[in-house]
Length: 120
Length: 132
Ligand SMILES: [Zn+2]
Ligand SMILES: [Zn+2]
Ligand SMILES: [Zn+2]
Ligand SMILES: [Zn+2]
View 1 (cartoon, chains in turn cyan, blue):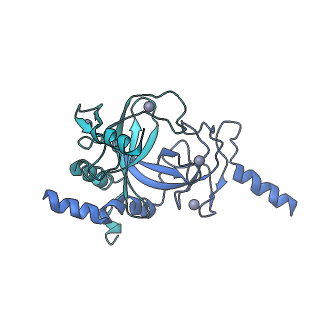
View 2 (view 1 turned 90 degrees about the vertical axis):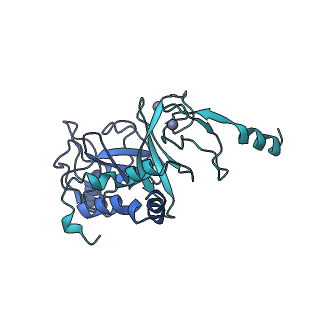
């Protein structure tokens, strides 16, 4: 298959979200292939770390926002069945409310008083 | 001195003792000598000072089945449904991720720096502007 053909196939490819059922274009607006639903940020566990073992297929829930050295945000997903963790880049149209809720969640429930660190 | 060298290797190998408990270990991130018993968790798996860990476990904490032994850097935090903070580590050698309980004597400032990382980001401020 030529590059152009594979690109045009990809641009019309969609998947149904395992969690909310939304029919999602496989390519994000920025042209990058997405791995999670932009609305609920859930994904499906299709590959393990080594990419070798049979796919699990279960729901992966977003559990954390990681900030890379270059400032990019990654979503950390955890598989509800096998517990495997993956990290994935966010897309421009990912649900901002869910991203922000995850970003502020630790500070909303701190295990120690935050007041001594007021200047951080 | 051969004797000292031997002792240090033993410490670094982090062998499990007879009861399955871990010996003290020297941190691969900041070289701190870390005692094995951690308040608030059965199983200490990272340095209480710099939060660095070593890639030893495969799927469950303490299983010691990963052959990697790479340095695992603290990456981000997640909150369990019961409100407990969990620390996510990222292996710099093989890219594996793991999620671990924090200990009662973990460095609060180091944890907090990780917690505020997304909040210092322009993206969050830009996002807040769009939704408010
Ligand atoms: Zn969805
Ligand atoms: Zn799975
Ligand atoms: Zn350390
Ligand atoms: Zn590793």
